[in-house]
Amino acid sequence: MARQNYVKNAAILTATGLALRAAGMFFRIYLAARIGAEGMGLYQLIYTVYNMAVTLATAGLSVAATRLCAQLLATDDPASVRAAMRRTLTLGLGLGLAAAALLFAGAGPAAEWWLKDERAALSLRVLAPSLPFMSVSACLRGFFMARRKVGPNSRAQILEQLVRIGVVAACIDAALPHGNEAACAAVMLGSTVSEAISWAYMEWCYRRELRDVPRRARGKAHGLSAQLWAILAPIAANQYLTGLLRTVENVMVPGCLALFTLSRETALSQYGALKGMAMPVIFFPFSFLATISTLLLPEITEAHTQGRRAALERLISRVMLVTLTLSILAGGLFTQFAKEIGLVLYQSEEVGFYLSVLGPLMPFMYLESMVDGILKGLGEQLSSFRYAALDSVVRIALIALLLPRLGMKGFLFVMLVSNLLTSLLNLNRLLTVTGLRIRWMRWVVKPVLSMICAGTACRFLLQPLAVRAGLPLIGWTILGAAFTGAAYLLFLWLTGCAAPSDFLSMLPRRKKSRS
Image (tube, rainbow, N blue to C red):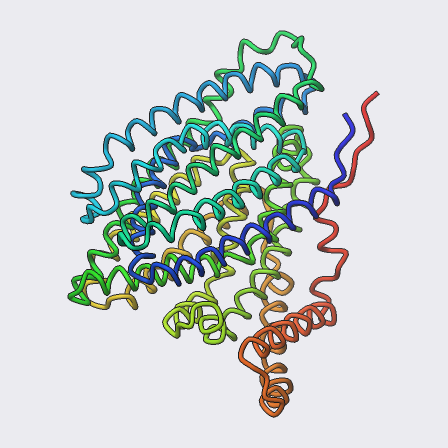
């Protein structure tokens, strides 16, 4: 089977990721302006429970569908993909319905006893019907990625975001006079409607794609259920346990902050400013790396399955280079322009402070996400499970110990410890499994020095000119970030760290059709 045009796929995924993250970020800015920091804190609390329900409904389904279908395609048995998807979709629908029933029935007790805020119950009930659509869509996304078809996923995500924003914009004005409870319910209604529309579109695309899949398998369908569970079980167990631990953690944070601030409202405002406002901005640049991760998961699985060790090591080495160079750039920019970004986006120096603290952690955050995806592609789900569980236990212990005494500063320290711990554990496992060695000079030293030089040049060469020219804050932020980014890329090239060809080489070459 001829490979898809990977350059086109990468362009689609990058553009889609940037558009979605930009839309999501500005949607958060819009919400923050309408419902305030306390409303954003309630919004985040609601998603604490909802995300656990989403985990129950979707854990491992997308990765399992991608790996199982990719393995079947790599072994010249494409017809078995039909049987594999029937099993995956049936399982996904069952999990989604069970999670929806549990969330709807448990919304009241969860809001009253767990979140300590009865205003969350209505929103949780509104969100419950979205779960079956999400679980089936997760299976379909895995199918399309195994087939190297990024268009349906990208278009469905764009449609979902547009519908969500449209529903919220249409409903929130009517809901606001009734308080944050009704306003958050209006936002959640947008999520449920958009998930249903997105699933309907993906289902239509799936039915069309099946026309190109042969109907008669070669006798391997009898073992597909065992293969599916072998892939899904460790990933699902990982996500269930870590999801539960993260839910406990997220519920604990506002309560422990309230012990420090002596005010539940202040604690919710601080929590909303960090989780609902600063964190979406921090992960906005990850769109570029998410593209690479999405494209390469089937390639990594295929190379691992076929035993092409040299190709696998070369591919992972490129991933490490691109991940670290781009994340160091993003972290440097957010550290250098933290105050300006907080004021431009949210008119908040508090958000700017959070960005300045989290900026240096961005390389570790991004590295953790990328390496975790690679490990799952290599069948190392159990390692990811152990590390994620350990991380959650450490976070919960530190939250209980530090937040009542130090407040938000203690939580930022918890995030520092957590990201260092998980990124280094995952990286060590990857190096052990693949036999790779860290290329300190190229992957770390040269990018860090290039960022320092670029930032220094901006502050001492460009900033005085911008001050004399009287540039507005937003103008200086955009110009300074663009200058720093360009200077950073120039220094990378001058030091021999990376060139455009290193980034282009991340795209796998098209293979010839099998005769």
